[in-house]
Amino acid sequence: MDNSFPEIKKLFGFGCMRLPMKGTEVDIEQFKQMADYFIDNGFNYFDTAHGYIDGKSEKAVKVAVSDRYPREKFLLADKLTEPYFSKEEDIRPFFRSQLELCGVEYFDFYLMHAQNAKNFEHFKKCRAYETAFDLKKEGKIKHVGLSFHDSADVLDNILTTYPDVEFVQIQFNYLDYEDPGVQSRKCLEVCKKHGKPVVVMEPVKGGSLVNLPEAAQKVYDETGSGLSNASYAIRFAATQEGIRVVLSGMSDFEQMKDNVSFMKDFKPLDENEFGAIAKVTGIYKGLDTIPCTACHYCVEQNHCPMNIMIPEIFSCMNTRKIFNDWNQKMYYENVITSGDKGKASACIECGGCENACPQHLEIRALLKDVAKEFEG
Picture 1 (cartoon, one colour):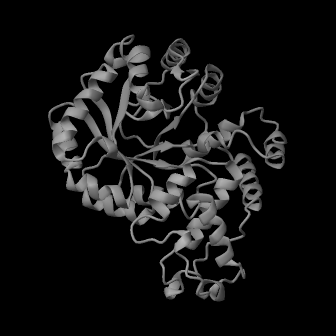
Picture 2: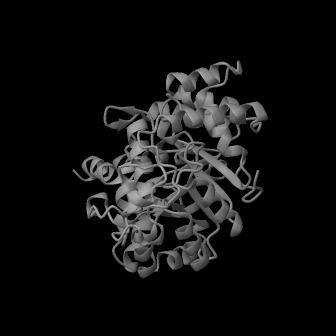
Picture 3: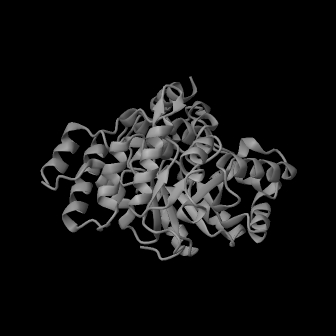
């Protein structure tokens, strides 16, 4: 376990993006019950953002946590999100409104939210990082970090540009570990290179690693451990070197009890458990509808004149089909096809990619399927 931020009591944090709901409103009483159980069992890290649950997460944190506990009993992370500021002068008023909504006088952790190559330019132009560093000097923020959704080289550039960033929050789970779009392992390596502790989001991939295909479920059942599917996913992340806290977006009290049961006295995965996860990952990979190996031959040496990131786009399509994952459309639009990277529909059908593909995939036809899925 990374020993940064000793004020974080344990490896496990409460992500407040998927709180219990009653219809369209947060189930405050159940959230209180969950927060109480979380704190009573020695945990103290809560994570929110202004846009979570249509703006209801911060307010719910105030009612369930800030109004009911002395400030030293909990740590709170919040975020600066692109849609809520168009110029530097907008940031401080927005920040003050977040403090008020959460019912606190400072944030323990404050993140530049959902950074990628495109929106990073907006954050730079508006001096968002500099403003956060100033707020830290004023005691309104204890630690400045960023959350991230892009390739490892983009993360490397951001951390090189702003070396005073103290921590990084990345999407990290065993299925995305070698994924060419999400690049969990590569992003973790960049964080290690820069000496930044890591906060993990999406350790169970939005719940997808809880509801497993039958063959994958059989692998875990045959271990005889009696542990939940979530335990394998969360502990996989927590076992990695450099991880400081793993967030879980728990949406009911039963999920809270389960997560606490294996994270209160955390034990890293053993060899057999890693083996089971490898088998489950292999089963998922076998379900891919596009058998791309991500060798990148199709895009190297100018084989694609339209700069379409073909392997990353195919990985995104596969994840969409396997999990019906809403997050993949965001990745497609804001990461994989952002900037000068072409969309699937930009294909001019020159055939250069197919000539280079060792798997002999009908790439041009597959790109039309992708365009229909994400652009149609």
